Length: 171
Image 1 (cartoon, rainbow, N blue to C red):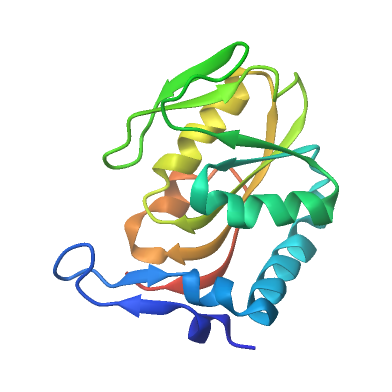
Image 2 (cartoon, rainbow, N blue to C red):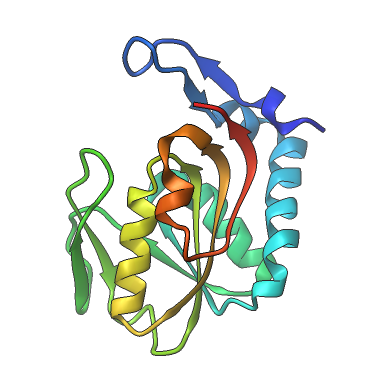
């Protein structure tokens, strides 16, 4: 199945000249969603991750099922909120982002961690997650995305990490 055909493009959103990649149409198609997650899991299985870290909301639709299939823990990178316990705060590097928070209890020293999200654009969110994981002593074993916008430099920002994406758009 061609997953790219399952992703709706919304022209001139959020502003003129940008074609938004809407994954909600893929998520509504159970067969396509299952195929996407299973393919990402197949490509990530060899990484032997202990934990998946993903941004809240859209990242969870990729991170949670991957965590389930791979049998890893799951930690959520959150926007400014109050987390119970001690949390690490880091200024986001993605365009327009505020700080992100990650529970200090989530990542243990030398834990192998996979960063998962639905979209790789500039790489700012993933890079922020990586820096937080490394500050907590974890080892990032790779990054995984459903969609990659290839012209925005995200892969270059993550050059030191094995990066997987299922669907690429030249942007």
